[in-house]
Image (cartoon, rainbow, N blue to C red):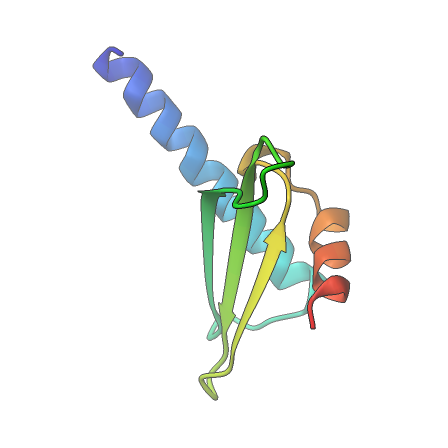
Length: 89
């Protein structure tokens, strides 16, 4: 892979991470002091061929919540985030 393609892919990944963070802040009306981490990880389920997007939310009181969306980072929508948040225990 050339350097230009590598940079283009990394910038696209970063753009989608920031987009998902904005969606999470908007869906749950979170303030700027809440830490949101987004990661594209391989799915551990054998029946799921795609990667999953893991969203970790840490509040000021250090409570930690994890939301898993079974879609690649580039395909995550606000509806996916809301659905995954309702499913978690």
